Length: 91
Image 1 (cartoon, one colour):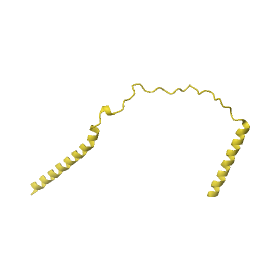
Image 2 (tube, rainbow, N blue to C red):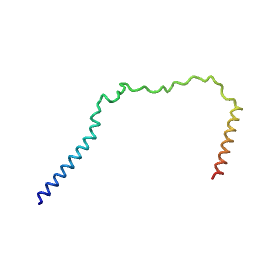
Image 3 (cartoon, rainbow, N blue to C red):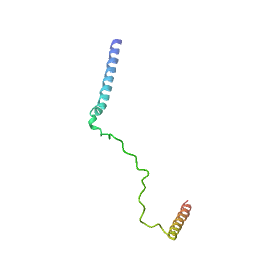
C-alpha cells in the first residue's frame, strides 16, 4: 500500500516538474526567436557635445520701450490681483 502511495507521489511530482518545464520553455521561445540581427545598430562613434560657446545671432527686432513695458507689467499685476480676489471669494 505504501509503495503504491510513493509511486503516485513520484508521478505527481514528475508531472508537476514536466508542466513547469513546458511552461518555462514556452516563455523562453519568444526570446530564442530574437537574434543579434534584429537589434538596432549602435553608432560607432558617440554624438558630439553641444556647442556651448556658440551664441545665437543678434536680434533684428527692437526692444520694448519702457512705457509699453510698464503698461504690460501693470496689466499683468492687475490680472494677478483679480485672480487672487476671485480665488479668495471661491473659498
